[in-house]
Amino acid sequence: MDLFASAWMTRSLEESVSALHLEQDGGIFAGGWDGCLKHWDAEGELMWTASLPDRITVLALDGGSVFATAGLHVVCLEAATGEQRWSHALEGSADYLYAFENHLYAVSSVYDIEHNDFLESAVWNFSFDGTMNWIQRMDERPWTIQEFSGQLFFGLGRPKCGFSAIDAHGIITHNEVKTDSPITCGTSAKKSMLFGHANGVVSNHKGAIQSTEESSVELLVTTPLGYIAALENGTLIRRKGAEEVWSCNGDIITVQQCGFSFVDVPTHWAGRWSGSEGRVEVRNSETGELLISNQSSRCESIASNSDRIAVGFENGDICLWERSMFERRMKNGNKSEKKDERKSALQDKLRALRDR
View: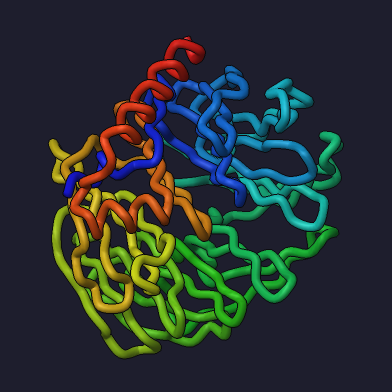
């Protein structure tokens, strides 16, 4: 079966896709390397296009607004129309965004080329109308933002490492971890929060070491009773607690995400990059069985909900898979009614003409 032939839709951003946000109803927002931002509705119709000042790295939606990092700026647009509401320049690059309890939290960092290191970072708090409420500076660079147990947490690099909670007034409470290695990534679920470290450690919200992997942990996603880690050396490993359930090796992993269920088991999607060729792999998240794999452009971003998963590629393509269609194609080996294929192709051509 051809994975891309089973995609529910494919759209083009016309530049490398650097950020995706998938709404629960299936609408999708996509941001690009050169600042293009597009919104398609759940039926695949292009709703609007906007131009931002620089590469878009993070998208967040709340309160009828879409928030984006764009180079040095945090930008807010009207989600329904794409009209810009406000923009604020930060001190250094705008790295992360998180909408939480009717406020927008942004992280910035200043990088010094001579020292080859980050000199200073800051957490900014904005009201949704663009009012800046406070800024909290720190020596450590936050590498991930996680919401857990009604609080926001930042996973930190050197010198302090560990993770810190920050409240609505900017007061920081630091938490030690039983390793002095910088945090590189994180993930959270209802009952747990995990952090990946540069030395291969995976730690939990209590600061305890959950496991130690053979290479730096680059990406983490939660699963029932455990997690899947993507390591710097290209290994994917799923653990249930500290117990290894399955693992597989390959080229470096650029993105990973747990997606909709196939035959009542959640799927796991990963993008790999050999240095010259990309590949998308879809697995059974419980057993690690490879369901399907296809060559692709380099995978740059990924987003999912309970029924759909979207992947953005370096060549500008955005492919979206829908659970029921994916399941039909997997069971039928991509054999579908010709009438439906002709209708879909005609619809795609009409949309392409409207999107020009």
